[in-house]
Length: 353
Image (cartoon, rainbow, N blue to C red; front, side):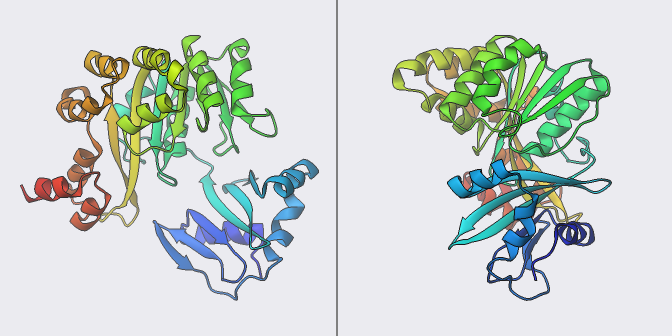
């Protein structure tokens, strides 16, 4: 029998699962501390996922699911948290991937983030990017930044999310959370109008296409602090991804825009923490110096990697430097460090030194 929504929340509370996957033909699957485990029970029947989730949808959501084959939405439970849910069709049936979002936003200390990341939340304007693969904690890091601003500054903050994940209460700041598909047609459409809404801070859940990135750059030049995510694995790849999405004729102008407005890139990767049985992030940090800005402007981003490794006094570090420090602290195994390194051979030499 397919677990109900309440039963999924019970699994999260009892096991500490971050994700629960429901696919017909196999029992429910939970991801606990980065490892997959089948839950007790019979394989799910073909129509079971639909029986649980379709009654939760509006008619508009049902139409989108029917037309596109995928739908993202979220459901909350008071005093527990939220589930971010992706419904999708596979082999003619519905499957669901659910991600648990706790009620309380973790602090920077709880997330084991470098102190330099906190400094990005103190910036008055321009662009800060939090990047990494799926399930690497990007949304949680951004939420921690917003929570810090909310408690320490009097800002008007607008978040654009698909769907809304963490929910915020007003403290010193006023926070508006707009869900794409419900409160706005698209990221790009919402960004085109955000200038008239007078925010100091704009959070973009994902800069996923040319139209969104172009609208984000316009918002940045209007003087807002823009926080956003990308699915990229390094600071250099992040910059190149943004530039390469534009037609060749526009790339020179985009390089100039990025070189003058980029304030920081924080790229995350999660590892098993040997000291707590939880997960711990390794974080690559780029802080644009004049040399880095010049490298972006002059199409020499290949030079930036070396600048990260020599910019430790400014709080910068490459991903492999971050991983090796976690190994030295006894938090990450050598095996996992080499497997996750951008340059495995260099990591082996670094750990052997």
